[in-house]
Image 1 (cartoon, rainbow over the protein chains, first blue to last red):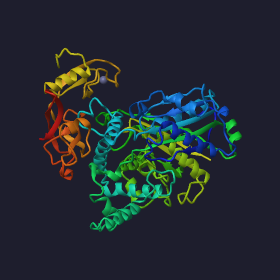
Image 2 (cartoon, rainbow over the protein chains, first blue to last red):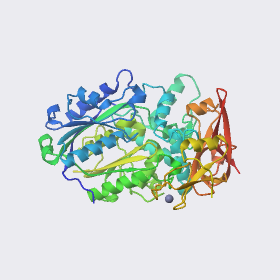
Image 3 (cartoon, helix red, strand yellow):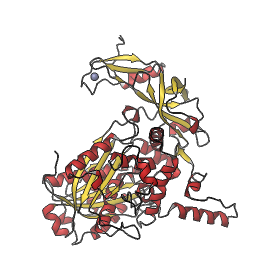
Image 4 (cartoon, each protein chain N blue to C red):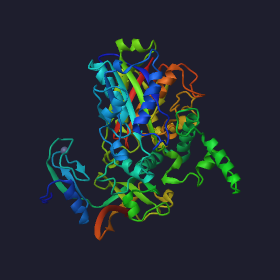
Length: 419
Length: 140
Ligand SMILES: [Zn+2]
């Protein structure tokens, strides 16, 4: 059974404000913001001299920003050269992989303290260009000629889930409504607005323009209206995560070094990574991600925890359907049963298993290569009881999980945290 | 048994497509069928394949109707008011392929039913004077 040879702790975590930042902020600026916020979160402070390596997760600065070789560039900005600065790529799981490799390096004894960087600046390209770059994470040989886009691949998976389990468009909407309610409470989120807030501001704008004020009764009315167009059936605009610029920074330390930085480290007790065929047509199952099932199996086994032991989770809701599938792949619910839990409000902040209290990729934003490092930032805050505004869960979080999916599920990284 | 003497490469698979043949490769050791073609059977770790022409019959396994398309499909003339369907087809022979689904009401995707029988339709697109053939399916 795989295990960590040394204890590994998360001793600091922070992120830049996520949003539409280019050209005001680019990769280096975003990363420095994340670094400063993470540094502030370390109880006894942390200095570059304390750190042995900088592990960088980034999907595609090459195509987004015409800049490769990001590892040393990021390391140098925070005083970490000439230390090792590798870069990891696994589509949207890039910084989840960087985190996992940092955990493995510390556990192995090669390094004692590592700074993990997740960074992506997407809005340097127009939306069509971003769509094109994201699509290269799918199978360009055989999915491209058939017209696959990223929302298209998840729409396809959603159609299979609808057919097999009776999942509905309203279930997808419930995920989006919940994540926007959470994001409204996150000062680092890109869209700090609930769906209700958005409806109100839209009505106000229509009124000011002297146009007919829409008579939406509730969020569902709004989400079924022309204000929320179909992007890739059954997915509408509000089923898709955002195009985002942002960065996140994590400080990891070995068990014996962790105490130098804080009296209350968050222990990383499980890590797992899985893979799957890049093309959906090469997979046996269109309603579940085998990479996620494999990654979570490894992480649970390592931590000796079971799905029912997890109290909160940040999961990869690049599209609303992905959150539903994640809840099932992680073993929180049986196949086809997650929607029941969602209808009962179990994944809300005050529910029995809060999911994506940060707002998720849906509302917090999805700077693809940074998302895997931003998830533990929320876990770190929730476990220490310092989540901003009104989104701190009302119980003491002792065990948490992050689930970071790459592309259309070709890669998944799962990490488990304990106090 | 097939007597086609061509290497099991992507290029050869694509050339068959251009000639309106949907081909797969079948592992002579375990019988597993691969579409698109593979030279190596990952189950057996052997490269003991034979070409097989597919019947072109199958059923719709999953699909979407896309209003915000790829540059290639925008070039083909699709847009928000003229969406197209990306689909996964389960072939009668057992394997799956990605393909455009045509001959359906893309603007009313709720009328398109998973499980419906489909048959192959090779789709020709003319770009800069050259004709390109892509894999498509339509209701049978
Ligand atoms: Zn075989």
